[in-house]
Amino acid sequence: MSSEHPRGLAPEHGDADSPPSFPRLDAEGMLLEPAGTGADGSSATQDRGRSWLAPCLVTLLGLALFSQQLVELIRMSPAAGQARPMGGPVLTAALALGGFSMTRLLQLLGFVTARRRREAAGQPLREVPWQLEDAHSLHAVWVIGVGASIALMGLLGLWSLLDGQPSGLEPGWPLLLIGGAVALLSRVAWQRTTAVWAALGDEH
Image (tube, rainbow, N blue to C red; front, side, top):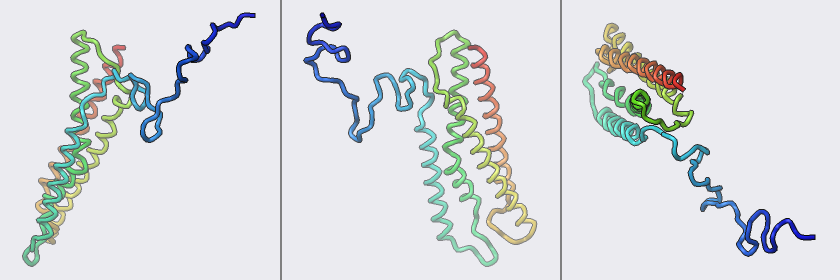
């Protein structure tokens, strides 16, 4: 009886003389992804949005400024009955903690707005990872929290100003205004980004 496969051929590998194929591993023994896919299994042709370089640079700037403020604060010798000024350290700490999310939120708003314009112009759009459509919500919540923290420091500064016991946060109202503006603008950017993503989804 004749075999179902030609002599010298294996059904799995084709030519019997060729070495068997094994999964490709990297230097750490991890399975390499097939060409055209990413580490999460998504297609390499997906539109992953803007680079994270700018948010990282903003964070590094915030850390550098906060470190400078901290050194100056430690070296400072306030007069009797006075407190070390805390406005600068509060703002630079907020930039270090919230700069990444703030910049990323603005990036996502710009990204989805540009995507909407391309769609209106009839240009083809690449698929985006599903995580990208929800990322702005996480960043917005964090930035709103940072803004609220700045505003709280401003309220404490107003309280100490009225109480007559210096805390270093006086006069307080600049921090209150800055924190409120950061929280409000983040909320507006969050709502705007969500609305544009929803409009894009309604078109498909």
